[in-house]
Amino acid sequence: MTLLEQQADNTQVDHWLRTRGIDPARLYEQRALDLSDPRFAESFGLNLRDRPNDIIARSERQSFDYAAPISVGPAVFNDTPETISREIGGEVTVGTTKNFSVSTTVEASLFSVVDVSVTASYGQEWRREEKFSDRLTIPIGPGWTSWLERETVMRRITGGDFIVIFDLGSPPVGATRFTGTITGPGLAGTLTDRITVRSRQISAASFAPVADMIKKAQGRGATEMSAVDGVYQYPAALTAML
Figure 1 (cartoon, rainbow, N blue to C red):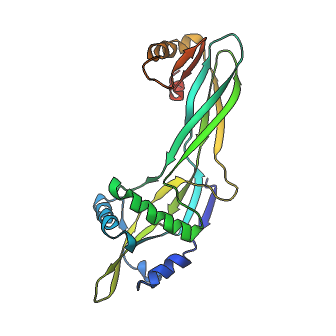
Figure 2: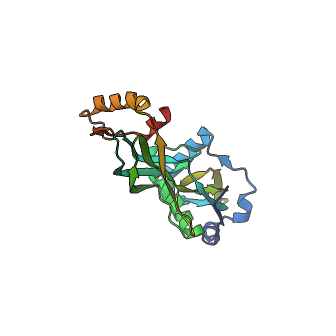
Figure 3: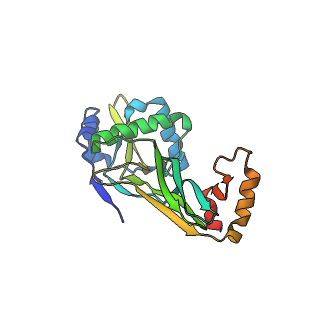
C-alpha cells in the first residue's frame, strides 16, 4: 500500500515550457516515446549529451513506499553459553532505479534534469543515492544470531515525461516527449525509514558449515567474516541458508 502520494505543482515547469513556445496542454496530443524501448532511450541519451539545457522533466505525481528489506552490515552468531552484547549494523548505499538505461556519461545530466523538476514541482531535492549508517548495540542470547534490516522509503515519479525542446526555425519550436519511471530514496512529511532487528535461533550443528567457512576466510580480506571466542560475524544473507 502506498504510504503517501503528492500531486505535482507544475506552475514553474509549465511557465518554462510556455516561454519556449510550447503549450503544456497540447503536449499530450502527441504520442510519448517509451524510454523502456532501447531505441528511444538511445535517442534520449544523445539529447542529454548534446542539449541538456533544452530538456525538462514534467510529472503528475510522486508516491512513497517502502523498498524491499535489505540487511545492513553482517550478522552476529553467539556460540557461547552466555548472553553477549554486540553492535550490529553498518553502512549501506541505496540508489536510484529507472525503467530505462542511458549511458553512464550522461547520467549526471539526467539526474540534474530530474532534480530541477522535482525541486520546482514538489519543493524537494532529488538525490541520486543516499548512504545510510544504522547501528544498534543489543543483547544476543546463546545459540542466537542477530542482524539489522532496513526498509528505505522510496519515492516513485509517475506520469513522468522528459520534454526535449527543438528550435526548428519555421515553425519556430517543436518538442519531443519521452516517458519513463524513476524511483529513488526520499522522505516527505512524517515518513521515516524502518529499521528492524532480526534474530533467529540456530543450532551449533546447523551453523557448523558456516563456522568452518568463516575460520578459513579469516586473514584473506573477508571484512564481514570473523570468529573470536565463539562469537561469529558473517554476511547476513547466509542466514537464509541455515
